[in-house]
Length: 137
Image (cartoon, rainbow, N blue to C red):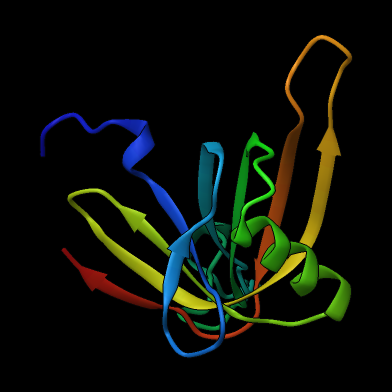
């Protein structure tokens, strides 16, 4: 795989619930992380006292985060609506030359900031709220 540009990692939001995804406006940095809890099944009979884990038993989670310049675009308005209405819409994360992750996420944090001699910025974090799908590119 060739080196990829960071700007090609996109976070997209289902704008009206019909699968019409739009890239969230103004993002400068984006990230997705995956986690899986472990279930420890170690016992006195475990070989050599080594920890044993139960395969496929832990809770899987994903989180998406992004930060950027506040543009007051339709995606900014939709993000505010999602947060204040407590909605859990579909999001997509496009990972260049790898694939598309899609699933329901809750907007768990949104922050706005600015200084008198700089641009208005925002940061948001989304937590997975169900099964995710992966489609290879």
